Length: 81
Image 1 (cartoon, one colour):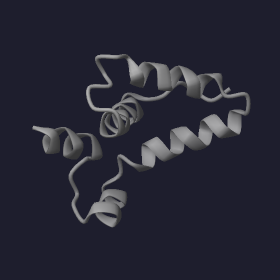
Image 2 (image 1 turned 45 degrees about the horizontal axis):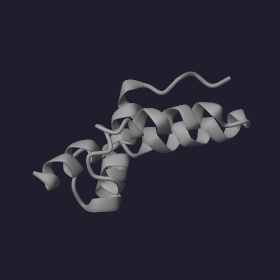
Image 3 (image 1 turned 30 degrees about the vertical axis):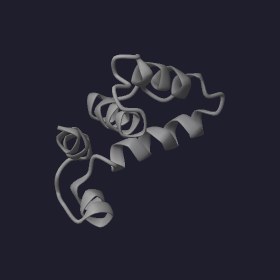
Image 4 (image 1 turned 90 degrees about the horizontal axis):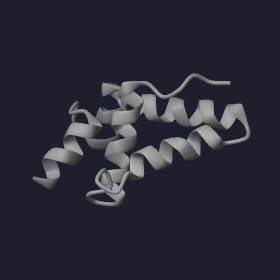
C-alpha cells in the first residue's frame, strides 16, 4: 500500500480543490478528496495520483505550465485575494 500523502501533496491537493471549488477547504473538500484517493482499489492508481500531486509542486513543472516559478498553492491563493 502506498504511503499517505505528504504535506506538500496535501497543499497541492487543497490548491487544486480551491481552484475548482472556491472555499472548498471550509467544506472539507480536500480531506474528502484525500479519503477518495486512499480508497482507490488499485495501489498503482494511488501512487500515480500522489506522483501527480508531487509533480505539481515542482518549480520546473510550474515554469512549463504557467511560465512562473511560484508554487501552485501560492499562485492560486494569491490570485483570489
